[in-house]
Amino acid sequence: EIVMTQSPATLSVSPGERATLSCRASQSVSSNLAWYQQKPGQAPRLLIYGASAKAPGIPARFSGSGSGTEFTLSISSLQSEDFAVYYCQQYNNWPLTFGGGTKVEIK
Amino acid sequence: EVQLLESGGGLVQPGGSLRLSCAASGFTFSSYAMSWVRQSPVKGLEWVSVISGSGDRTHYADSVKGRFTISRDNSKNTLYLQMNSLRAEDTAVYYCAKEPYESIGHYQDYWGQGTLVTVSS
Image 1 (cartoon, chains in turn brown, green):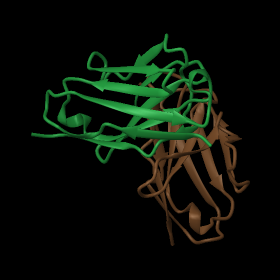
Image 2: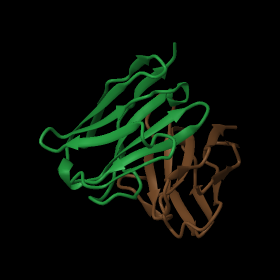
Image 3: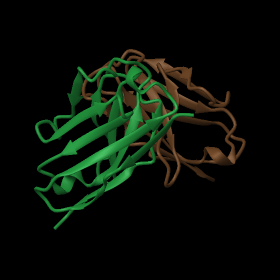
Image 4: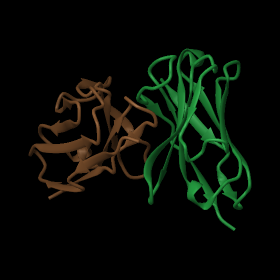
């Protein structure tokens, strides 16, 4: 099973600042990596797939990069609605696996 | 607009059974694979099972293999998860999720709001 490790566990950021979230895979997943956003009481929402492709309706301030084992989700200028938990997921190998999440909180 | 509505969750004793349903609308149901993903405070997000659009291919997490069965009725636009021999560690919110292609093995592009399953005596 591929283990996905996200860091940091919590990221404190001021509105308008840039946030950079990391995700590491225990073995290569090529570019088969997705990012999701989850707000309290809500289901996860797809942000990024294929490591860098944005899902429909996702604002331009969100971007994904990386391949192999190292991936990054960047939020260029945090808005109030962006404070949430973010998960990465690999879909290169069975079973599909998720990271433990990074909580982005208001500083 | 894609809509996924789960039902069937509840409280069940260890060893018991439960069947979850997911009613889909807003897209051509038979053209897309569908997954179940669960979430608990202990294990976080955990992918459970997937079925192809035609229903001829399925895959399961090892933790549920032999106990859970995924199926779909394309005439009713409904996805199912039959859960048998339930254990305390199956306690979670269960999400139904759509995949972007007919084939299995991809990410999930739309999610339902989830249904809570609690396994406890």
